Amino acid sequence: MAFNLTPTETFKETVTVNVKQANGGWKQDSYIGEFKRASEEERKALAALSDVDLVRDRLVGWSMKDDNKNDVPFTPENLDALCSFTAAVRETAVTFWQANLGAKQKN
Image 1 (tube, rainbow, N blue to C red):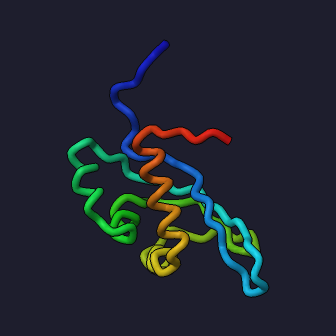
Image 2 (cartoon, rainbow, N blue to C red; image 1 turned 120 degrees about the vertical axis):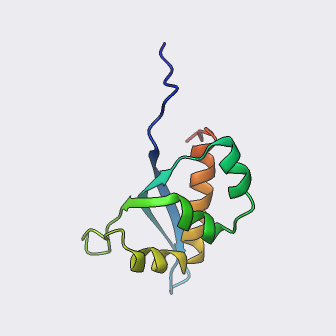
């Protein structure tokens, strides 16, 4: 069994967000986020950040589609839009921590 001591600088992980709908129901949306890895020293500093600041610091790209199945480019404006959406920020931060700390969830 091999172990890589020099992982890539980034990793990709699916971020799933439950969105409350106007009719009272829920819709589950997702995108694939690309995150910068964090060293142990960086993790300590990152733990003190708000979720929004963590997302702005660690999210470096995504594969995202809009409701019409069009690509949503990773731009400063679209990142601002994501960061104004509380549930998306929370789930993006949780996904970063789970993936960066090596915590794999059971289905």
